[in-house]
Length: 168
Ligand code: DAT
Ligand code: MG
Image: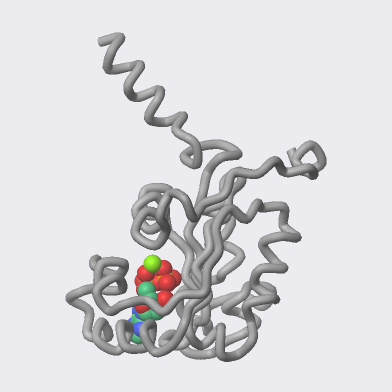
């Protein structure tokens, strides 16, 4: 019983999993890159107070994207989603901070830009669900899966955040 408890405890305390160490996977989609929205999106996450721990410009393979969107494989738009996402480079990022998964979803807005409030990224920069400029993990569990799918461990940086005492 104690052993089970300790295992669970160390599992929860693994870096990047809870509290201020929570991490999320964010990607500027090919339309966001083409439309020069990378700087604006990074700016919003930086100014909010989250910490950037991984970033790369990458052309995702169809294989990776099919795995990334595996839960949507039976949807009628799955094929067009995969070709849209593989149509050009994406900027893949990992951001860290307290409640970053939930907060990032709020910063993104709703899946359909038409339902997204002004002030959110999708509310401000796009109009169609099939060109909604940004991805963000929808739960801590999917964030963990997505980060390990898109990034190797050595691509994530550990660095001391000099502003942390002003944020927390
Ligand atoms: P989200 O990206 O907000 O997590 P999701 O996981 O339900 O939304 O869907 C993933 C992506 O698939 C979404 O960002 C855009 C696309 N998509 C979702 N619903 C769609 C629809 N009805 N028609 C076309 N594309 C859609
Ligand atoms: Mg989703």
